[in-house]
View 1 (tube, helix red, strand yellow):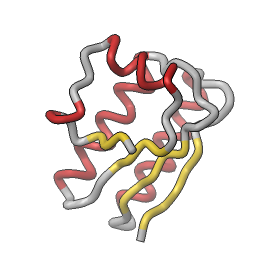
View 2 (spheres, rainbow, N blue to C red):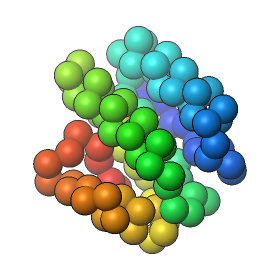
View 3 (spheres, rainbow, N blue to C red):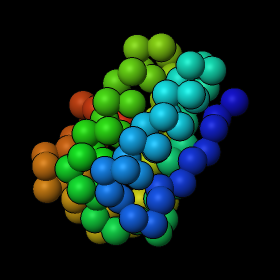
Amino acid sequence: MVITVSLPPFLGRTEAATFRNQLLVALEQRESIAVECAEAGPLPSLWIQLLHSAASSAAARGLSVTLKAASEECRESLRAIGFDAAHSALVLE
């Protein structure tokens, strides 16, 4: 089973803590995660770190974290920090 979560409209620190808890719950339930980000603009570095960390934890458990419908702005913010899909546990769909 895959749990789908959506990025909140505002990507601040408080929202990151809440989102992190959602990711942790899904991983504790041994479920892969699909992050719906069609409405997301550029991702702040805190959020990129959060998603990368969750993906690494998921991969260690045989699970995955997938970004679904990532906008071009979202993809550009990942490229700007040197994100390489071929060498990352975070999956772009």
